[in-house]
Length: 121
Image (cartoon, rainbow, N blue to C red; front, top):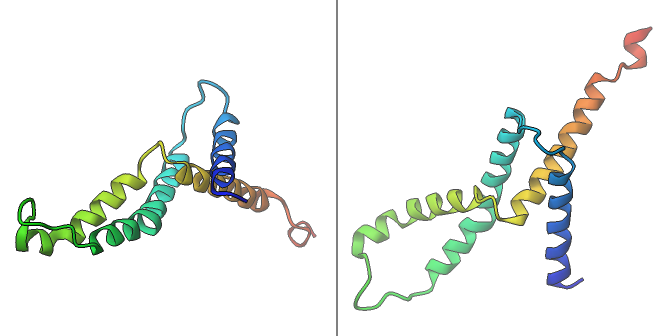
């Protein structure tokens, strides 16, 4: 499987999950929390290491370097940037995680509402 086909698969599954909702249907607070959690996961797991790796290279030159202040607060800046990038609505990985979390949550909700044989007897 190539990278392009993997990306296409992720994108199509996220689109399918979004398209399943009827037009004009609002987003529930639970879905908002779920989408925010998916964004946090993507930010922490994907973007934070990416930014750390980018910063590991020494591109600092004589000009454009923030000095000691930049070195001290770089971690906080990277954490903030990773969180904001994770919240992006145009990132297919977050959409895919949201779709999977939503499917799993729906399955768990269905299990919880299904009466068990022990409780009936």
